[in-house]
Image (cartoon, rainbow over all chains, first blue to last red; front, side, top):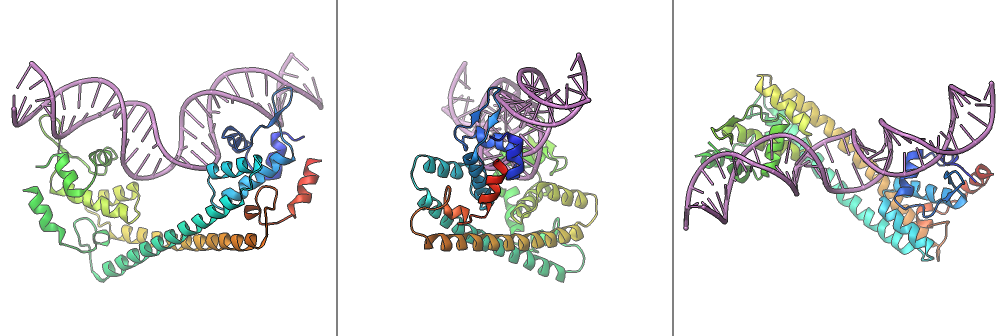
Length: 143
Length: 143
DNA sequence: CTTGACCTTAAAGTCGACTTTAAGGTTTAT
DNA sequence: ATAAACCTTAAAGTCGACTTTAAGGTCAAG
């Protein structure tokens, strides 16, 4: 019913992205016309819109593929999806904590380093953090 | 004074990583022995420790290279580094906000979807978010 | 009959920071 | 003399989700 450029228009996806998804097996069997053009139906468009949303939620193509395959084979994918969403939330929480630590580290560094007038440190005291402890170790290691 | 494996021991870096940094020009001119082995001095080890710290703070190799080159040519890299740190803090803030939105989105999705009993949606209502508005558009687009 | 707008595939390129592999040279100990 | 433990380079592989390129087939309009 639809050729690839129509599907691009409807979904907002790039034609090469759609072919890529197809090549990765996310669309199952896509119908072909006599001249070997892909012919997309309503189901295909639904799948593509689904893929787009799932990608936007941070799902990987492999995860999405699994969902689509479960669905295709009559198994409700909801529990899998629900679990994945919970995993993603957990990962995001972790990542936020990591970033907040990172941010604090950088802010502290900036604060500390700005107290100093002029340029200190072997290369740059902003990054080296003014420490001198490693000095001795290094000297010893070299000799 | 030091061969690469000694530098690995001191810095905790992999030998191929050190060679990689060298190949990218981060170490400047590294001395060579008669048999063409790299011979590292105190300065080189300092640079490598600096690179390690900077990488840990989220600096890219190209940024670090610039710092090292500034330093080498006698220009204090501090103002560049300070600016980069501020940029990184800004990026991290943005990223945290993005992740918090993402997290809220996923949590809302989970909450909403769990109200429903059984499996709804064309593929999975967890991801599709129960909406039906797009339905008509799609129907029209196909015909 | 040719131009332009479609469509196809396979393969390579992109991003960054490495890691791995292949093929080989050096040095030290046994 | 040979094995072990170093060292070297260039090139390819890795991760994921694409994008781009090259080379070519199809189809309708002018």
